[in-house]
Length: 374
Image (cartoon, rainbow, N blue to C red; front, top):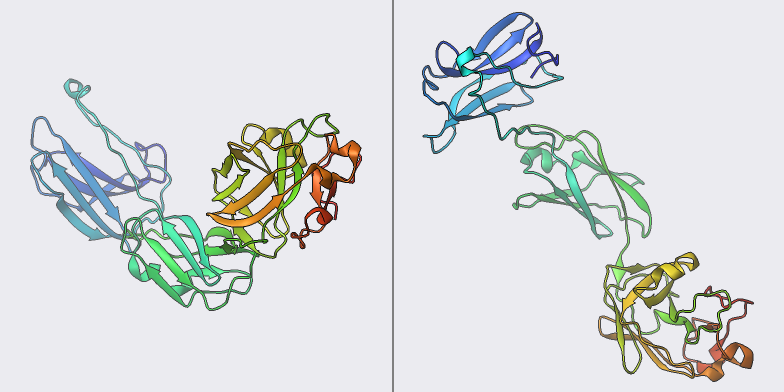
């Protein structure tokens, strides 16, 4: 490690020498033109031909240095020595310098370089309104990992009142807060001073998150809102069948296991999906989603049921639980012209889904829109 990219200059830093007149592996401190050996490895350690060895150098935040090596004949790493030295605490560059005779110029090879950085939180999961689960990319130093002051959430939440670190690798840290997250609010978790086992610490990593508690809808908590069973002749819409569903509640629902069916075909959601409060979603065949992208949120289903023009029995399930069911009829349009095609059939009041024909009407707009009529 050096404060200069020119490793043959009079720079400041540290380096490991393999070889030399004593055939050893040693650590030096370089101050300008002065090289000072601070870890003196055993003589004749690399008095071999050929020499094949692995070197590991650890530098801790308190200035402790440890040097290890392993020859092909060694089963484990062997300590070359340890020292505390805080003369230089920063560096700009690292690299290799080879000093050799002409007969050795083609006999060097290097491989398996690696260096350690500060740990990093790689995933955050909101477990509930008071708990976060944070996964890190490497093992953590325990005292820093369990220090509640090293974690903070904005928006008046503050520090957790407890921290639990798992024993798995990589570790998962569970943070439990006294103050509760507000549903649908956005927050930032800031992590400081959490260190790995080599004393490299996180400095101000920020992880944004939202508190969205997902539940499974019950009957009537998701409803059919519009149906396009007879697209042609087109009136401003693609000539493609669809249904639109609506969430009339204040809850967020997981619809990853949603199924839409008629008496002969079942279509299913194949991706992780959430429906928000008061949100409308268009359901169509998975090959037709691009055709409806300009009309709002679209989810494509596998094996989208073919809708009968003169009426159908349509059912909506989430995780095998019946959520909504209608037996539609072309008579529900109440308009012979619009009933001949090109217009959606839409629900008048999604909060009164059991009124049958009295709660459905042909689209009230000039074109066959798939937006709620309000």
